[in-house]
Length: 146
Image (cartoon, rainbow, N blue to C red):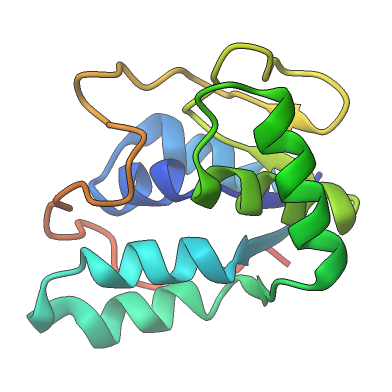
């Protein structure tokens, strides 16, 4: 599967979550949005920044275009509770015709057309906000998905 990976799944992977590793393993081509890159790097401990940056280089990083911004606005308007960061990430997957792989489904976002939820992260464990404090990555090494 060609996929765009959401922030929560990457953080779970870096924390050593086996379900996140399994979800990444089935992705033939893995991408992240610039939003996800920024969220992961922002919560990374300073001593692991270079290793984490190297890990993130194993994913294609997709930028935000006008079409993605327009799609993100549409998604945010259609799905109450969908934050701007999540809307941008989901829109990046949609516009690039990639499967959006997330552990944080919200109402109206079900596995289907371009969304898959390999496992649900408990809301109390992984908040939907980007301001979460990240644990020190357990797996900062790069993994090739290509």
